[in-house]
Image 1 (cartoon, rainbow, N blue to C red):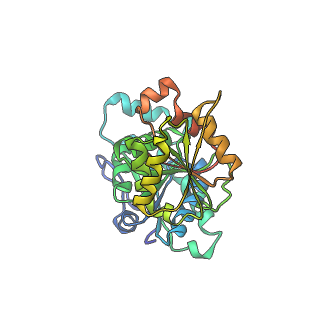
Image 2 (image 1 turned 60 degrees about the vertical axis):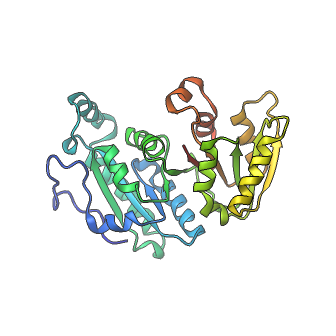
Image 3 (image 1 turned 90 degrees about the vertical axis):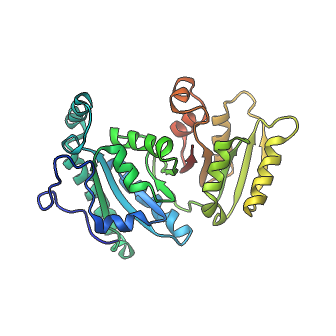
Length: 299
């Protein structure tokens, strides 16, 4: 896009700067339709592949950005800074983590000529502020849900602080064709409706949409509200109701997605909130832990 991430030796940020951002690259990042957020080098290539597919599917623009907590450039309690410094033993220093992400990005970028104009933004310091700065204006953010501490914290911020539409890459290889068959896990709740409305641009471009209603009420309210929402958004799709039987709802959704050869799963995330779902082990947590395909979600 505009400029590659600057060398630390050339531009050393002020000691109290909360995020290191270089304006020329960041201006492009701000206005992209899809942002590949790269906090963890282990998932950088997957995130870039999925983001590229998501942008191309809607004839949109793509950007890429690294974010990372950096105790040298954050204002925080001493305990938090000490915790961040302890990470260096397992994950490397902030500069080392950036260097690994940059290498993964450059290797990916040079595989295809049409990627040459894409450049990597960099924001280090207070992670919450970096996530806000990089993602606030972006429609869709591609980011991992697991990985190093930066990845886990950034994912939490994206969903619960920024309320973004987030696309989580699959845990293994990405097969492509993101919008070949989008399966929507549906219940008539606000968080599910917000997810579908936010994803409308990508649903419009999908080859096939199936709205899955698990354990519908006797009056068929799940199916009725699903059809009404599709109609209001001008989307064509099948509405299917199934019973989970002795399985969990999460297992039922993933089994259906596998049988129907879904290429992406869309859900409203964490109806009961993040920490309560951690305690109860509910649907969102199960899907994130057992998924084999990209998942799009919004809280």
